[in-house]
Amino acid sequence: KAGVTQTPRYLIKTRGQQVTLSCSPISGHRSVSWYQQTPGQGLQFLFEYFSETQRNKGNFPGRFSGRQFSNSRSEMNVSTLELGDSALYLCASSEGQGSNQPQHFGDGTRLSIL
Amino acid sequence: DAKTTQPPSMDCAEGRAANLPCNHSTISGNEYVYWYRQIHSQGPQYIIHGLKNNETNEMASLIITEDRKSSTLILPHATLRDTAVYYCIVRVANFGNEKLTFGTGTRLTIIP
Image 1 (cartoon, rainbow over the protein chains, first blue to last red):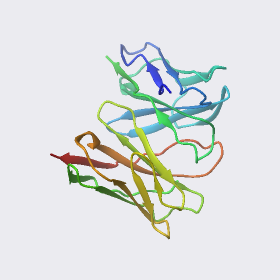
Image 2: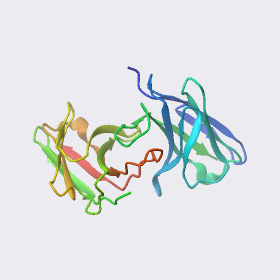
Image 3: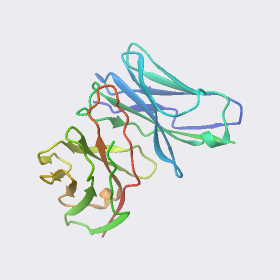
């Protein structure tokens, strides 16, 4: 099976712009989670989607949003970009919900804000 | 979620077994222990997880103490490619609470 695929791998934007990141989960996986990783804060949870519904949300401002499509693919959007949004954005998928279901990560999108 | 404590760094000789400890003294009865690793510039890689019993897969073994307050990840024959940051996580069994909380992990260096 192919792993979790994230596109693009690298992105450079300027302050005030918006960006959309894409995630294709492992085939058959219905749950998709998004995380932000920075050297200072480590890995922080953004949100989780299951069956096209947001089921769980982390402590991020409303500029961060996401959605999931009927084929389980997911996108996240960040509007009005700030310098502090520079980070590695990771997507993880699992077959379903429940703590006995491992999450499998993609290699992320590295976003740099100038 | 229960907090975990890991040594910040460890070295292991290539070909030897790498034993990575994790303390999770406040773990609850329904919390799973998960291990991930992250190699620079890649996403975290799932290794193994368990609840009470010891577990083994093609990558590693997970030994959980009887009181579940600590665990050890064992890489039986370490190679240079096992150099990475290893994260021990305890994950609460709340349906719908799917987030993983990563700590600072253990930086494992395999020495040739």
